[in-house]
Length: 260
Image (cartoon, rainbow, N blue to C red; front, side):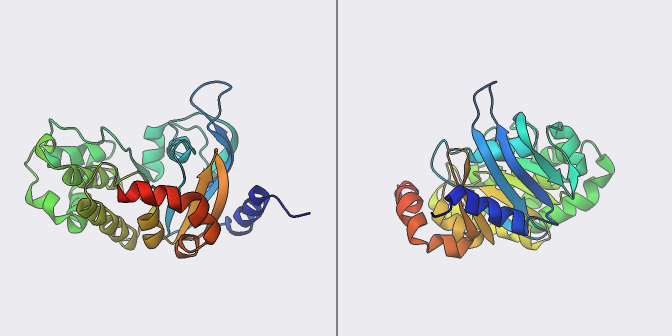
C-alpha cells in the first residue's frame, strides 16, 4: 500500500526542519472558531533561504503567513523562531524578535513621505533609523532619491518597494511577503522578484507567498505547494517547476492565470 502524499511531505519536513530560523509544525488555524483554513500545514526556512509558497486560490497560503506572524489564531501546532516558541504571539512582539511582514494590501501610509514610512518601520527602536535607512536605500536606491515624496503619489511597484523597505527597518532575520507581485504589470513583477532576490542575497531569509507560481519557482531555493490547508508537495523550486504532477495539477491552472 502506497504512503499518503501528505505523510510523505510530513516526513520530509521532519527530516530537514531542525535548525531552521523559522518553523511551523502541523498548524491548524482559521479566522473563525470551528472553521479552519490550515489543516496541518508545515513549513521551515533555514538561514539564508528564499522559500516560496504556491497553490490554488483558497489553499491557505496567506493564512499560513498570517498564522506565523500572529495575525490568525493557531488552534493546534506550533511556530518557532530561532528555536523559541512564538505561537500566537502579537505581531508587534514578533517584529522586535526578528520577523518582518509585508501584507498584500494597504501596505504603505499614503499621506506620509517615503522617509516617514521608513521611520514607522523602526518606531520601536528609532535609534536604528540611520543605519537601516542606509541598508534599505542600498537595496532600493530610488527610495533614497525620493525620500521626501509622499507614498500616495508613487506607482504600485514603488509602493511595494516602500512596504518591503519598511519591513526591513527593524533588521529582521526573516521577511514574510504576501503576494508581492499582485496587481503589478509583468515588467514591475519582474522587478519585484529581482528585489526579493537582492534582499535575500543581502542576508535576510525570505518566505514568499506568490500568485505567479512559475516565476516564484524560478527564483526560490525551496517551495511548498499548499492545497486545502496542507502541504501537497515540497522541494527545490526548479524541481517542482519541472515535476509533471505539479505542472498538471497546479502550474497548468496557475500558469494560465499568470499569463492573463
